[in-house]
Length: 499
Image: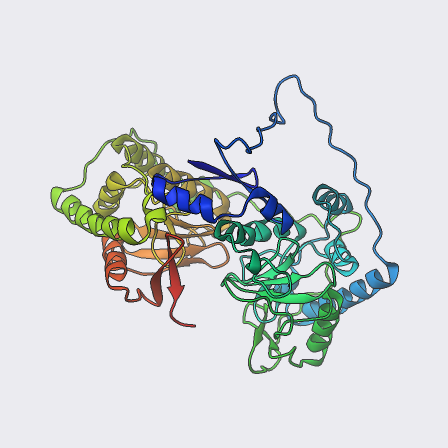
């Protein structure tokens, strides 16, 4: 069975009984559309719409419609821009690193296109705010933060956040939960902030109110970050920064990296974080100088320019293979019984030649435990199985492409942001990896914002040690370094035990 969610996502499951239950529980397309969510279409059903012609089909020229930007209320727009002026001045004087993460304003044509194609209208204060800053750079919980740790989102993030929330609503089939006042989400809500724990700050478009959403929790309009409007929130934020006072429950503080964060207690001003005024995005953004490309010697030293070699198939030793397979049998048994949705996503074994080609392209030799694991399962599948807290095991080909991408973008940061001697083996959809260091055999973690981490909870003596600990956590239910296994709708998830 295949499922098309909103005409854009396919899901599949090999268990007919489980498939029938999923289909029976889900909202109908009409019910999904009534709550502002993309519908689920079950391929093979007569009600499923036929796919349209691809945009690039030869002989067809599809012209892009012209969208006319609108002008938000001048008085509202003026107040929004004044609030941002005050925020930017404070950031320039006290937290210049955060000032640089603010993106330039959205193209008016893009805002007009968004409203027209979705038949929705953004509140004027939010519309004006997007014209000033279309979100901020950084992973969830980084970049420009709204208290306590919401990253400012752009207009394109509205759809991705709504898609994620709507998928839960539609699959669970709970219409009572799809209430913009007292439910857990509604397709009309506009996400304007998100954090690393999966919480959203949103605007309710009918009234303009700001509220908070968290997974499986009731929407909050009267919580710590509830506001009568987006504009009221921006003006209160500007005032708190200027006074050095708390905004609701949180005080503005500046990190050693000159970034704005929010804390329970105040902290003295940090010297040396002034960065001057932000350049104007009009008529065009300031062009950043192009960094020099690393030399061949620098690439070679960083492990990213390996000597060309012919792929050579190597098989792992029998003892390691037996040990890895024994651990995988424990994991497979648990997943089959407890988390069948995750179990069905496990990929078949990798071809030995695919592993050999990845090794040759990377100039590295995979540790025997990783090689044996790939020969058992060539990855955990998309949004599938992986170690805590939110990783999925990668295929041999994905390992190679991820390694190449990180080497390509590493530039002059090779050696401490990324290093070509590392083998990424697990992937997080927010831009992180777990890796094995071929020089030590130990695991570590990589994130776009922080680079390489070689100490703390992410370090294990080997890939096999991590796999064993994961199997033990599944079987016993005991946490693995602060994360406990949990099954949600037949899928394995990891829940923090640290609150």
